[in-house]
Length: 532
Image (cartoon, rainbow, N blue to C red; front, side):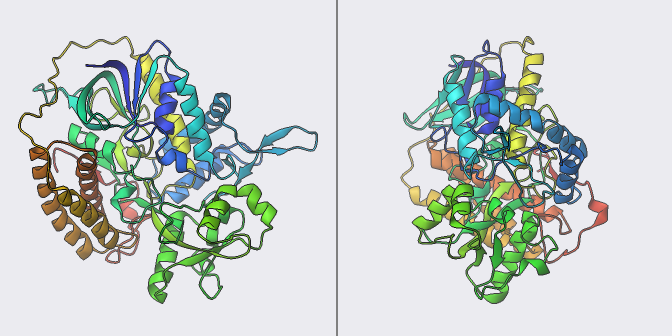
């Protein structure tokens, strides 16, 4: 039975930052359910936002974030994250992240900064158009050098072990049961501190820019352990994903619009200026909804993103990976517009935490996309997500260090019990339910919603949850079954949250309540696992 000081579920920017910020004396385990790099961090293109230019200011970054969040950001959290932004970039540079630099007239250089939707200044530090890959691989290389960090690829967490589940009145996390996917056996990982850093849940939708692993595992596990969740109705749809039947998860970075890219209809005309004075640089919810409206109104399969007015040298310098990926599917963005559609991209809600990453369960923390900190409000502003990962990874490390000498009494933890289950011979059930959840979430709980569609989704979800729970109780766990169970719970949380919000705000838009209700300013959609 492995015993660790710290157990981190997830090997992305948040989890790696935490591990690298803890002292070498602490024994740390990092779990990844697939390859160690296979997470949303690796595929992030745009970059990480921070106030790094003398013409910019902390107050400007705060105000831009509050504006994008449409009245639901927690200002204390926004200020904390933004004020710690410059230090987060410096720490990444110290780790060796190869950010793109620009030369100064005197021969020195500075970080090249780009601009994205919602930002009033250039404040996005980036590594060309593969910033996430640079951050992920750099931090992972650093983690591999640490003798106190053990990396477990192909290990998917099943559930947290808590004292309440073992019969106590208090609710403290003791570790987790974990499926070793290669050996197909369940292991017991005990730990003094457990951290959810597992990313978001955009895989709940049929079309997503996220990798396959974004099935909301950490959010569902935290919910089952007794954590409240909040604002799950605010699912961000990235406006520009490459439209092609084989272009799976091919995001086209927002920086393309930041550097002058225009959205056009099939006839070549622009449409964004009539939706927002910021046009293509409006926040993502506005741009995604505008594209969705134009596609539905005109019966077209996509709109087009055009940066062909820039030179090929400019495009290759700024967007080499996007250019090559589009070319792979037959589109030369240097000479022609590229077809794009919105796709589910980011979970703005999640498990409720404070500024130290604490959840409702003692010794269980949550950081990164799985967490609800109040930073993003009703709409995450571009490139604030990686910043949140670094800042809160470091915040949790400080909190753990402060209490690392605290001791708790020993509790006997039972091994995983498979004595009453069998191997399933009905794989079709998992495949069918998986497909059904993602399709009706796209159709009923997508960019534009109605109460009738939400209620229809909720009714179907009740039946599916019952079916999946029965299946889970009778058959030996597999990676696909674990993900399906988590995906269905997260889908239900999104639906419940959306039904609670009787207004349109940020990423939640409903035809039944098309206006924003001022009385709901600063009112989060909180779901309590005891009540629900």
